[in-house]
Length: 311
Image (cartoon, rainbow, N blue to C red; front, side, top):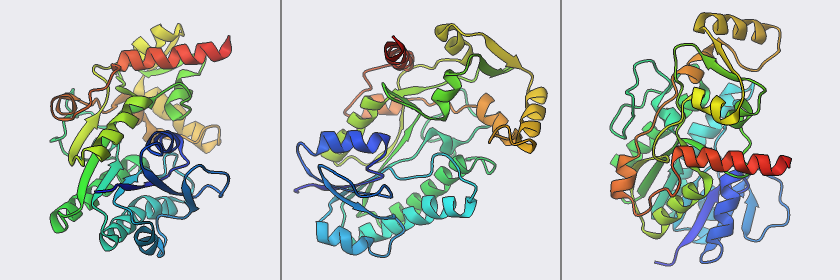
């Protein structure tokens, strides 16, 4: 089969890296909400909720879809965020079926498991997806995976590769997590180790490409081996640890929300203290690509890149 690949969210952080790599060997097409500019691939500004999407897939002859588009930072319009994440994904899959697409890759997230006190120490792909209703990103990832599970049962002809990455880090990463690392003091919830599992952005790109090239299906946690606790993060960064009791932090977040000093509220407390810790055993044993950097090596690489910029 001649592969013709559509990337949703192609102008995003991971999308641009995939376009650069895949365009060397395949016909690559992209849709995103970013304004049309100078692109070195077939690009169209389009919403994944568009009614014209099925016809576009047919016209382009798309065989493989890499679905990256999602709302990472929740907006004030929760209904719109839900519509893009969940209904947009539904529309994309339905259009893929109409267009005769063979393979569908989606970047879900470890957040789909949810941030819960009773999470296993290490989460495997067979553990339930519970999300968090108070954290829309986590809730939407769970709902999207439930949606995709239904399509796997009703339409097995569309192969699905579901990837659940941990925290993605690379040379130029800038997101909610890296901003926590950039503060003068590292925030921790007393009594919680709050471990991070990191995946190097280039490892994630390689995993997606191997999935496309091998027409691989299945569900995989995507993380480097091992984890790095919030206290280890502070030590590596050489920054003091601001260790706050959970009750005090909940109160401070409530006041900060009321005074509009922070976009975060008390519902984000569990996000800080019960981070999902992903077991990558299945990825290592059954996927044809093994991450080249562990969680600690990924963090060290990110930190070295940041310090090089400051020099």
